Every structure is written in C-alpha cells, then in structure tokens.
Image (cartoon, rainbow, N blue to C red; front, side):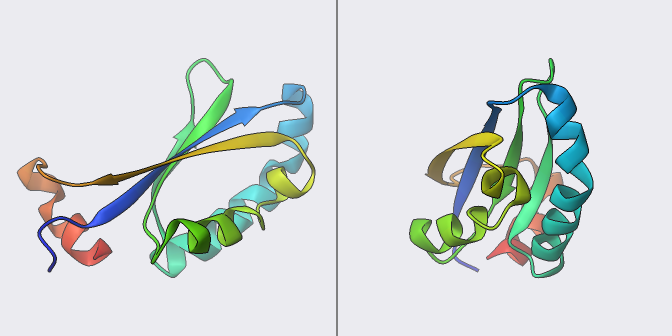
Length: 104
C-alpha cells in the first residue's frame, strides 16, 4: 500500500429546488452504487442542512474522476455544481486503515 494515497473530496452544491433533487435522487443513487461497486466512491451523503452533498472518492487522476462525475444524473440535469478537492492522506484513525488500504 502506498502510505499516502491520493483521495478526493467532492462537494456537491444544489442549484435547483430540493423537489427537483428529490425527483432525480433514485437515478443518482443508482449512479452512486455503480461507483461504490467498483471501489471509486468510499463515502457519500447529503449536507446538513440539505444544500448539497459530499462524496469521498478515489481515482487514478482528477480528470478520470471528472469523467465519472459528469455521468451523474444530478450533473446531467444541471441540478448541481461540483467542487473537487484532491488530498493526500498523512494520518487517519486506526479504524480507517483497512478502508484506506482497500482504497489504494
């Protein structure tokens, strides 16, 4: 395992009313599941209060991740804006070590 895997924090900001987001949510969840299944997405969920969401992801590069994000039904329907932050893990809680090993 690379001791410093590169991960991405993806912040989603809703740019349409919440009822539009809720209507698109089933397709968005199906999309998320696809990338959980292949190991790209590690954690996700809505912000509190519900102004957007967050995804913790891994990818071979920022451009590879952007290609994935651009397939999100939220994105395709122009319902969100993405803000992507790349970071290197230097420290983590012991409970996360196995997760990060699997993510690398």
